Amino acid sequence: MVDPARPAGWHHGRMPERSRKRPADLNRLAASIVADSTDEDDTDELADDGKDPAAVALGRKGGLKGGKARAAKLTPEQRSEIAKRAAQARWSARST
Image 1: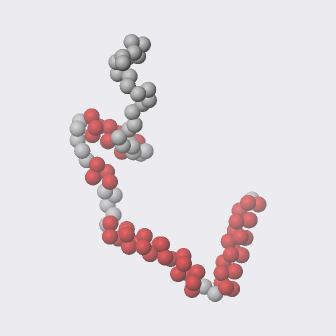
Image 2 (image 1 turned 30 degrees about the vertical axis):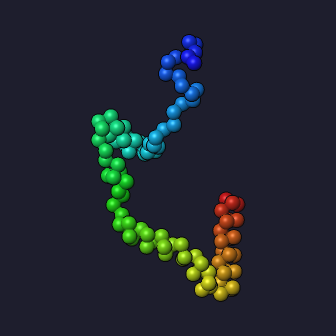
Image 3 (image 1 turned 30 degrees about the horizontal axis):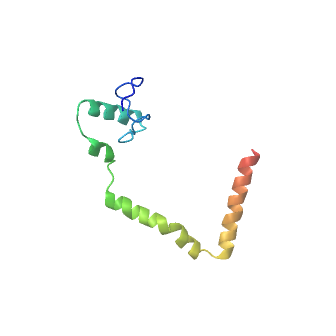
């Protein structure tokens, strides 16, 4: 059924969804636009930040267990002293 009131390209009444998100950084956005317009595909260059993936995974692994390991090592008195200093720092920052 063809509706003469609607233009020929009107199919479903909503905008098409984007196939991918564009980068928030203006330089990367500009590079992405140039690459799209010239049919160049260098997405792997943008994704590589110069970090070793194995080192990143190892650092994250250590970071995930660091707080629990530290808490298990502290005595209740040490935890209490740390909590008092943290509370003092929070409240002194608000009073200024």
